[in-house]
Length: 501
Image (tube, rainbow, N blue to C red; front, side, top):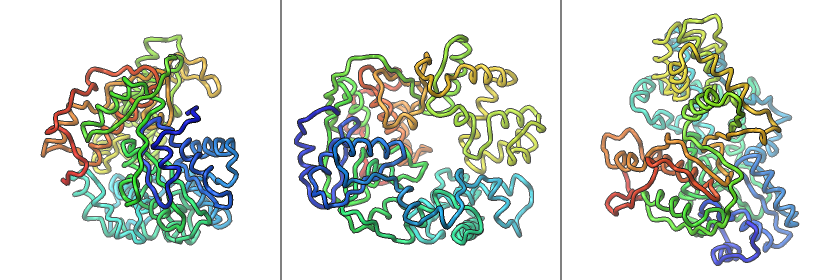
């Protein structure tokens, strides 16, 4: 935001004293506001800016340094925990976390069925419960109520009889990591820092992207003696699947707003506001005056839609180049580490070519689908859908896609840029085109009013947030399918976030 005059909203934040929470719409200059706030503080006050990820941390570090604010330290919560606990001296770190197969070799299945698919089903939920506990604020695994966090009732019923056994295994795995008997995960040392209740030396703590904070992160912040400013956009919470709880709504600090978007022109700001109006009226004042159309992205809601689009595009444009947001492997692989090739080999009986140890134990499509249904693995289901769509032609079209993707450093050679909303968060483009795989507003309203809806409150709200985040990446032009256009909202149709289910 290249402006020297600060708005009244920004001035109110700069002059605030004590704790505060700041709800900033997309493109409203929140980092510029925090820089101005930090510049007003006495130099002897140590300020800690906490970013959501390493990229945001490095960007903020450059901007604070350019403003001459040497008393501002920029970190992520993971980097703070890593340094404070001296992780590199005490533990070995397992960078990718534990796979289902790796956990199945650590935990004890004594007294349980020994069939491979059954053991992997149990190991999958041990993995998920361990992840849930590490993001939860509780000090005991039992209190984390992992079973209650499973949104699909049919999976809840499958897992519930094993709840105590799962919690026992998670407790033992966590203790083994504490004692250094097995390598630790990145989630572990963040949780360990929270349990240690260590105090940081900062006088002022600025938490960015607060809407994406998990319970363990919020507890780490609230343990500190520092003055805390929580900054974010409540409507950009799109990480509930990573256990985000929107810290802006979890604390009782005085609330400030940044409602002017210097990225969005008025017509795109109106589309964004109309979309969020399905929840409640939101003020977004579009002040953007950008007219260039040099950069363009096509955004999708799901990896499945993006991958299918990419595969069809390379078949229709054999001599053109493509850039993907993220690596191709991230689109072809499930969180369990199983690849699209593995799934295809299971479906077509080519067991000798299956690389993933879990899928190696599944003899046919029926066992694969049973595993997916009992674990709720939507990513594996996506791979099955794509494999069935292309059938025996899949290896051929995947090869063409691999050849079409530009190499790192050669992005300027690409004819098309495709990305998921999650990967594009924090980015901006002159032109944004949306794929039609977002939840249509009309369907959103129907799901909200339907007592039989499979969408719970958090997931429903997040679906609308995903559409809002996608819309607000655009600086000049937005190309949006008719099915995603929002009609004027009647008061009785509007969803109110204070409504209790």
